[in-house]
Image (tube, rainbow, N blue to C red; front, side, top):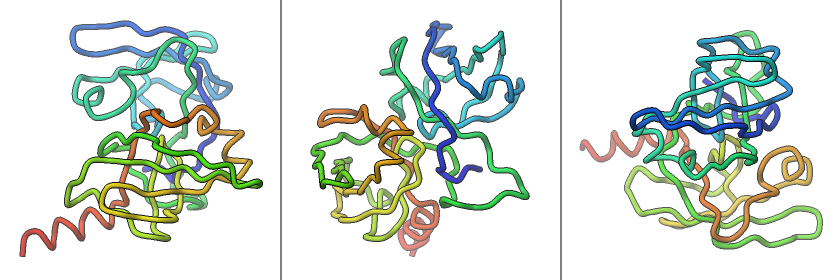
Length: 195
């Protein structure tokens, strides 16, 4: 489990295809603290570390992960948001993030609000893809509060710290991002659809 509070960025150093999987090698200032078999969220996707060499570590993404997320679009040199699993005795600063991305969305607008930025995203319409104003959403692994919400769009406001310390400064109209909807909302939607 994660909180959506990004620790740092990791840079893509190498991408290797292995059957239908992609093996991503990243460099990060956290590499020396990682270990093989550890789960780390990459742009909100929980992946297992399979190899560590020096300042680099490698994770594998299977075909299902590549179909559901933006990881298949990554290129060498790109940066992703990373977060290690929450320690059981740690503070819970964000919200419950599973690291199980539901879908991708497209950025349709970015507005400079002279002190923050408004990002508007569009996603496909599905009954369990729910956002609510002042509810939680995870974008590329970042825990955020929804500002406006419709059935297929929502907006968030980004403070300068988040803009500078995550890959939000690379998101522009047309960018594809990973979305994990609030887990409580997903369970409520499922329960209501059963009745």
